[in-house]
Length: 352
Image (cartoon, rainbow, N blue to C red; front, side, top):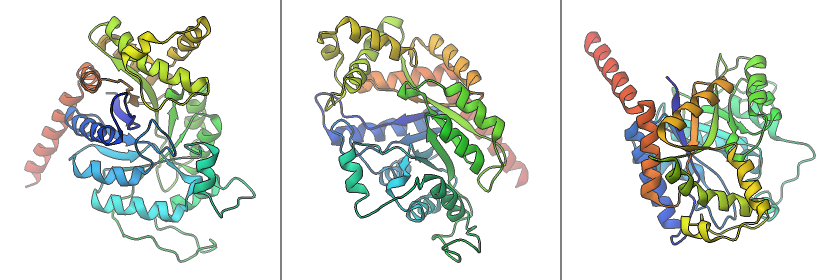
């Protein structure tokens, strides 16, 4: 059975503010937990007018306290801004508080514009790309496996935990896929960026994977923009908000919010704009439950994975909730969760 997770960016919608966006993220996580979704990840962005937060590790703690089963994670921590040791400490703490429920997704992108990057890295100078070594260090820190010849030999990470957060390398290129394979980490491809080459990157990851302390076997997923409604027409209408949002981004205009469907309908699109939207739509899944399920199953096969994450940028929150409910129903996520829970209860009863 295909597992489905959710990646949420706490997008501020037209007519609301950051507080409402964070409340919406919390409500979405609670609903995803009930519906049987496998994971719920939150992103990291800096100095953004349209996105409500920049600290996934803080938000993860809040979401974990309000849910009971679903895995929570970062999609992802922009590692070059930080000390790998401090990131390991933060996520070991989250793992100690919520054992078996924490994912550490990391990326090398800045998550913002050059100004915020300079502010985050003030006083730091890198003569070379630090990211590959940071990943190696992170794996050692998370597993209490700092080698004797390491520059910080003898270093330990608190708190001590019996379990370890799952480490995922997030990317949209073959370079990240190669690094994930070489270090034995899990790999998540960001298709929702609209970047081509996902099939090739994930295939290379699976074919060149080397077992590590993090995982003996390859594990991958792809994050995909999905808008689901009862009719194709309604799904297209709801998707128009994100169409305009990403069109503006492509044209170098940062919108301070996700526009409403009405704002999107009133926008004076040029023929070139419509061509750009059509090109972007090729990387998205928009339609009825049956259409969405069929396309996601095709993509899972292309990506050689049994897990996908959906990104649903819908202005109206009720319509967004309905979208994730329809996807859950189409895949029988809640039924699968109930079956697994019943099996676990039966095993526990037999042991007792």
